[in-house]
Image 1 (cartoon, one colour):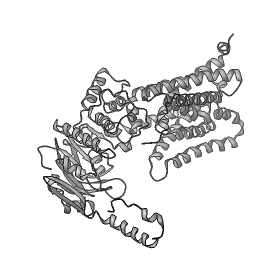
Image 2: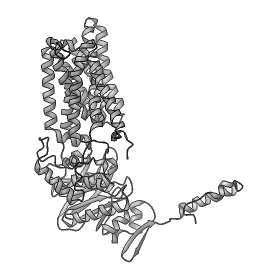
Image 3: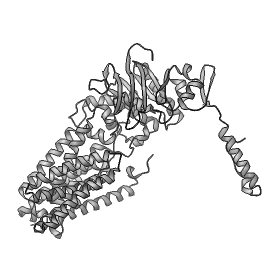
Image 4: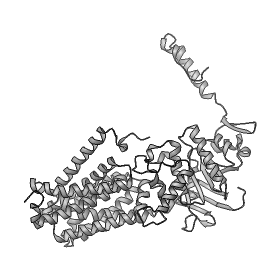
Amino acid sequence: MTGVTPLVRFDGVSCGYDGAPVLRDVKLDIAEGAFVGIVGPSGAGKTTLLRAMVGMVPRVTGRITLAGADVRSSARPVVGWVPQLETVDWQFPATVREVVLMGRWSHGPWRAWSTVEDRHRVDALLERLAIGGLGDRHIRDLSGGQQQRVFLARAMIGDPALLLLDEPTSGVDLKTRDEILHLLADLNHDGMTIVLTTHELNTVAAHLPWVVCVNGRVVAEGDPDEIFTSEILGRTYDAELRVVRQDGIVLVADAAPHRLRDALRHRHEGFEHAHHEHPAVDHVHLPHAE
Amino acid sequence: MNLASEPLAFEFFRQGLAASLLVGALCGMLGVYIVLRRMSYIGHGLSHSVFGGAVIGYVASLNFYLAAGIWGFLSALAINATARSRRIGADAAIGIVTTASFAIGVALISKTRSFTRNFEAALFGNILGVTPLDLLVVALVTLAVATFILLFYKQLLFLTFDPEVAPIYGVRVGLVDSLFALAMAATIVASINVVGVTLIAATLVIPSTTARLLTDSFGRMIVISTLIGALAGGLGMYVSYWLDVSSGATIVLLEAALFVVVLLAVSIAGRRPRWVEEPR
């Protein structure tokens, strides 16, 4: 990625867990102030790439640096991490305030209680993220968008140099997804470097200025307007994808959207033919079959 | 003399009462982490494992606390390590470590029948046998574990809630887990004479589970669980004295009764405990 100062640098990195590497020969720079989306199929290494940026992948060859420091060293800057909401234990007894303060544990690490300054910072941050007044609520008693903001607040309260989000738009409705992306865009506008993983190509194309396509390696990176092509996405997803450009909007769709429908119709016709006297068959409804 | 003051005339009761109050509070406090980290089975297994260490210590003429403590700590570390192992299931690994250790104790007892009685006390608790040294050990362990929880409160909370993410924020997982294993082993060793190996797991699990029904805040859960443990410990001693029933069993039964009452109360009050609801 072109930019002034690379905040994150992958220099010939192969990494993974036990067994074969998940990612091979990654060369990637992420500039300070960037807003980057990582896309790719399931198991392609999106989350591994994200985890590698904070030194949480056990097997690494090559060098990964954050603001010039090795990501595994204690000298690396603070990073905020927002996990997938699906991985959160919502039954855990924790209020919004308790969760947000986790992100500030290293400020007074040996003190069990929070200070007045801690509380002020939490309140100010919750206000900024439009969830002010919810500090004493249990995390389960919030909407999906509010829950996402709580973990965003936890990530931000330590004044991170980099904000990493693992599929922040997964499992939320369209309105919430839009709210989250606009909020992230505002944070990025204020100077925060943001990297997120997502499965939603059209969302990336509409909202993010930079995208990295991953499938065991970095397939391509750049402005989605430029790199979202059938050829690049085909190599990323090992599937036929159609890219439609109209009025400055990029839309990615299945290249053969009728294939499944036609197959179902074919099976249905065969079934109907074989059982034409069965009254219930006439009333079988196939969605989108007209 | 009334019901409360009469037993206090006896030194054994005063010592037993102090020990059971402290053990109740100690197990209630640490139990919050054990329950929330879904380690209830580990607590149960570790107490059996410690029993093996205690018998080995006895046979080798070592100090009970030293032998049981070291054995318990090593077992806890082994359990922690195996729990992270992906090759075999964590529950199977824990079962192997702890039951093998317990079996060593049983085998040694059956070989040397002369001290069977002492280990009956270890298995089922013997509050009448609490010595000043036992009381001192319980007090020191309670103080040490409370200090550990206070100093590491934030790291323990983060690690308990979000073990995958906590290290990204700099929480030293290896250090905290090792100290936690030490705290678990020390708690179990110190509690053996009061509640016995077979009932320690209950004193670790029931107060914190009851507290969970009463609050949605982690901080308040620790306070409530500690108070419930201490209350059951103290009250259990009196009930045990007046009804002439085993102290460990009485403490556990009181805790269980309180759990049932609280569960009924929150159900009747229409406040369904969130932690038993279906996941999102």
